[in-house]
Image (cartoon, rainbow, N blue to C red; front, top):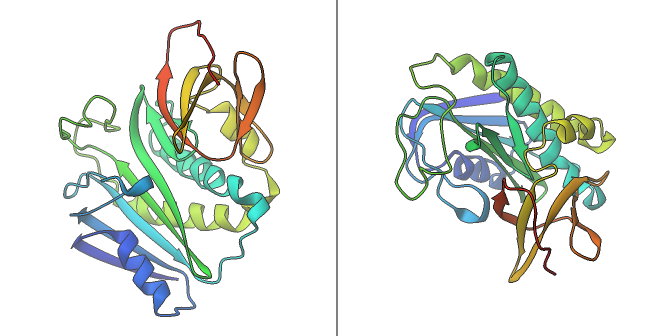
Length: 241
């Protein structure tokens, strides 16, 4: 496996995509100290100031991907990332928000992005280690793990190894029980957006296919995609369909 390190890039995802576009056959990882155009799910900007976080993408050529197990892939990677973070910060309680965000103290501190590129797969990981401040438009829901300088460079290779292993074994469901235990959404009332359709209900669990199970007013339904746009911490709700 090749590991490429950079001081400043537009996006490590873009580097990994270009690598796969050149028909590379070897796994490669791309690490940057800073991103000027980092992005996450749905193309949203991922704030990536210099030397305050982990900005990492892994390119997996010829990735064997089964559509029926698609929901499990990001779940497995998320659990692997949380394991590494928990080892580094044992006194903290990290939680996974379905399907690709990692939370600490009700704020997002890390995100995971998977993109299928031809026959390959690119896995992006962004972690806010000690970012001091954030743009106003995200400061209410995004945070850092620690508030002071922290030597995190050794975490890059730990994450690479853990994520590659998770990507190669995600089909066996072994990550699901752990994911359920550390779910940020379990038993909470949420609003899920699916295209232009909204569902409000209480999260019951994550099923064996990695789908979000929501109890609405008159039924219980499973969702394999969508965006959780609201999480209510108060008890009581009126379900909508």
